[in-house]
Image (cartoon, rainbow over all chains, first blue to last red; front, side, top):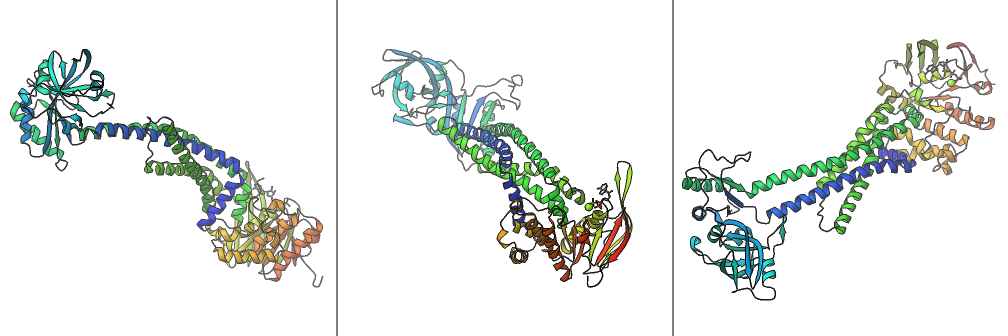
Length: 399
Length: 228
Ligand SMILES: Nc1ncnc2c1ncn2[C@@H]1O[C@H](COP(=O)(O)OP(=O)(O)OP(=O)(O)O)[C@@H](O)[C@H]1O
Ligand SMILES: [Mg+2]
């Protein structure tokens, strides 16, 4: 039997039971639509979260005080933890592939200007913070390149703080009191919006040394280091480790490379996408049971036709191919309808709720269709084998 | 061409053995026209199915065209059926969702014959059996006689050497039945071996050789008197 004839024959039986074929295909379509919809949302979320995290750049390493073991516990007993100092941060400039370094101390403090008082996030940083974290100044300038330990009392405002304390005026040159000290406003940041729930615009930036004093801290909370994209992460990490270990006498700090964090995050999100996809897969199984039922019925109904085919010279495997082909055609068409349905609903949801990110990768669509066909094949095997093994004489006389 | 020696066929029903055929010896030459008659349950259909390789004997040997076909695999049997045997049934056995033309084409499709070749053969068969204007009709749009003509056209589409007809006129009125028999007999003129099972003495009597069966055995054979 030639392949086009196989298709033609299976299509003819498919078409002669239109309503039944439609309903059976629908079972698969709903399953595929569920898988596509859920994984589209999962994948959309995945991309959204990764984009949020990687907006600070991916060749970024955070250095935090204290050595964390892989299981996350701090090893306090093995020796005292020396705080990370501004001098530590400056020492890293010796490394050839390092681009920008920004120390960081963050806390909460009262700020006051023009009679208005407000609590806000105060971020102590270095002059290279905009380049290191890809956050840019809108008006004025960022903190100047002062001697880091004796930086002048300048402040740069987040967009929201500027709006709330200096609405309708030019804040540049005005004074802002931060925790009792006067700072001169020299710049305003571009609005950045919320990143994972933190409002970056509700922040003021002052020199790190002054923030340490303000929050009464002996050391920095973190040092951000960016490196050239051409450099190997391992090489950069080794360099940083070398310098800081030499300065501290032991490795009492932890390196948190953004690249690795993104990798871990990515794989966690992949698992979530896979899990919701598997949930949708359950409904696909139900569709498979539908195909099994219909094909079993078809074999019973068409028993005498199977006998006839055998009498006309059909081999067992031709009968097998005809019934398997029918099961696969049902599931393949159902799968295609499900793809259209799933992508349609996903895009529709996105139109209705623009905040809900959706994304359907091609690979998912192809995999979904393949799994539909596979399910059809699996569901069709038992009935098709039964059809192929029927005794021709008995089959012929079945009514 | 058909040589059956000591062929028996028994069925197991529950824990009982039912002997449908008992020690059949039968030789049929190429181009013979044989009718098989006998009471209901005498084993006529069982014998026909054995000859058509749809079934296997429980014992005895069956030689077709000189070769022993008793021990063929299912696959080989299917090939022989496809190439050498045509079946016509009482109940027509047309595929209800396929048109007359597609029903006729079915054995050719199963045998993997090219679409171009099929088209020529099907058109010729439709014409031979006066079905050209019924080509696109489905079986439920055809009369009984037309259905049986489609079935005969289908049975001959692979140019079989043997045509087996099990009560081909059983579902037809007298006149149509006669018409169908004429069509089958035309094939004998083309050197096809025709074996017809029937209950109708008028139809059985037309055959050159008339085999009588009772209770799974051949009890006698009569020949049509020359010139009758
Ligand atoms: N599959 C089967 N299982 C059990 N017994 C069978 C089977 N097929 C036939 N038989 C038995 O074998 C015997 C012969 O059956 P067969 O169908 O050959 O008779 P027949 O001569 O064609 O009868 P009819 O004229 O009614 O068609 C009967 O007794 C029947 O009951
Ligand atoms: Mg019978």
